[in-house]
Length: 365
Image (cartoon, rainbow, N blue to C red):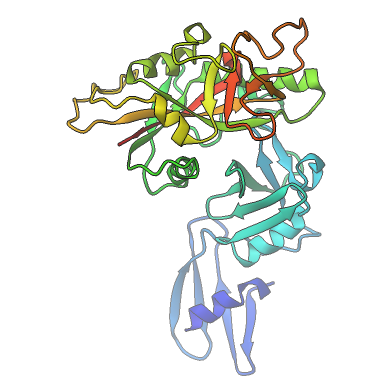
């Protein structure tokens, strides 16, 4: 009971003494290093309780010792919440810190002009409720954070959730554990895409070359268009098992465009809904050929394969069957991709593979 009482009023602690009531006090004997224990001893009895405080925030006066909150963009750059007006975030670091110190494992919902976001302190991620896009967040006592020794460039920074990248290999594949937030996020995208199938595996693809090409393209388009954020989408692409290794290594090949038709242009097709991409993924029992992976045995159950990709769609225009690029008859590119419907696009056609990053490979039944 004493421990529960202490935890309930932890935010009131300002020193080593906490008044519980008119006749009882406790003394705190604590160490400053992480993973060490805090001992609580009551003057009312000799009872001693042991509590692990390794994951508890240090209670401080924000004005004298401020903590700042940042989120990480795809370019590997940390942005302080209150300094980024483009994102429409209304909360300051002080607001976030105040909530965090009260509930370090909680979830804070932020309503802005651009929608609703969720701050998960346990996972340290910021999630857009509508798009399900996630960004890493961090807490720091510095007023400026950089992704790579002060250089603002995503081409020198990989996503923070990646495993260590081995440059000797053209790409690496990491199968996600089912009880992780990343796995649940991808599975949620599949379900939101109106495809409710039993999943065999979800693998993250780590290809440093393709990631750098993608980031450079995003920076280039942002510079050309004079904007800080170029529109991106998470889109699906169903394919044959035999194409997986090539896509993971070299990305999508527009020279193969037209195999399944090219109603909206001769590029690579992506779908907003997984149920549509599913039509282009044939069932088979062949193992998925992945670089550096042990050969898989043939399965008696037929599976399908689908990619969930990061795609820079930018400015879109209605596609036509003979288009080789979005503005087919113009020397200047006013648009970045073609769609089936400008107002409510479900199909996107990409003509430059550098606008694509094959992020996840999904196998399902």
